[in-house]
Figure 1: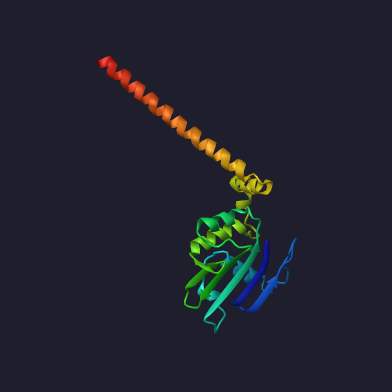
Figure 2: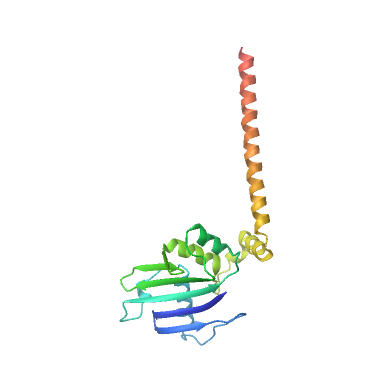
Length: 190
């Protein structure tokens, strides 16, 4: 769950700290009220493509910090551990966008690559626009979401391991059949 969004020097925003509570949060407003600026800022913090045009006029850099509370078994936490990033109680994604186009990425105050920030961001948040429904109909997304919700991580891993063993056994049997056929063919020539 996103608990805090802090934005500094992004587009028209000088400084904004947005604290969010549990439950549904809806950002509403008239056209031009700045809803899309907040979405662009969040996207930047999640590893989205940086752009020097996001930096507020006159500022050297802009930054966005997104703080998340995630369950201890959330896949993003494993990704952090796999990449030697501290797995604290909160997951803090930070992106600094410089006016010259460069960006810096951090997770839990550790410098990380933009690719890792994007990978973790994708595991935490899925953003859909008005006509963006492709990811919603992807069966792989449904299965992963249902398995995570049901707490079936261990069962999924066990099935994956069993499938890998079955595939390896099938390949070994096929190799042995080819060897037997080759031996039989050599026997016919002798």
